[in-house]
Image (cartoon, rainbow, N blue to C red):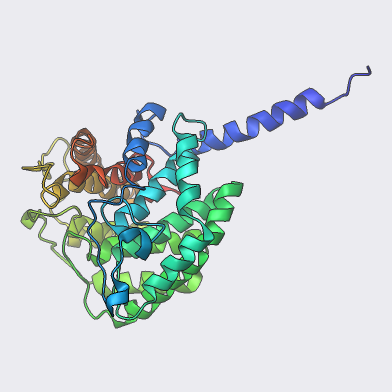
Length: 371
């Protein structure tokens, strides 16, 4: 048989393409984050995306007919204790599949996503959030995470991802429409350290809008951030945290503004907004926190605060100029919070296990820093 020229190089190229793709995703991960660590977080999500109870629903009843179990009300996102945790649990699986496509958990993750993100399930989800009396449902936190899931799927060059992204489109459109109607009406930002916080939601929304090239939504979100935060000064970081925070009000505000302002302008803004950031090395200025009871659903929030502080500090450090003397203090505080936060993601208690994995993956895969 005559040897076919070029066949071996062609086959090698086909083999290499997925490896290159995976390597590009792994480059976005933090040092030390490998497939073994990813498997630990994937197991947390896989253990909860189909776990219906316990469940904390946010459900407006309009009649007796609206009384139904979670799997009937929201058939895609009924697990993981609450709707938003289910959404970002699915995001976690997609994110880790993109990063480690050949991992040991990949088959189970694909199966779980395929089962949840069907066209029929997601049409029902879209109808649910459009229902009477649900204008504020999961706004902004859950809707912002939903958009993060949509962006992750759209960015992934994969046939299953394209199918799921298409299935999500009715729900995605409903979420964007809901947020587009709400943001112009929001007269003041919500500055708490939990789900209703405005700054964190705006950051996820803006990343989604830019990733999907939704320019009008991006302008609305960026304009809202400027309107709410550009004139802020002297944020009282020493007042933080509140006892049930999982987001820092001050750092989240800086983290969204670094997405909005040019680097040089952000550096000046940050000087007035957080003047307490040290310019010297080895200064302890922001210490990690410890949850007094990780088995308490609210007190476990503090474990998530360390993780979100870490990625926000990294985000802020990533855009200040290389010559900025505050950079070392930001990076060292980020590293300290990273270590404390990841050590607390054990899965020992469902109160934290159903959501902390998503925060850990957002941090370790540097999602907020992705280009």
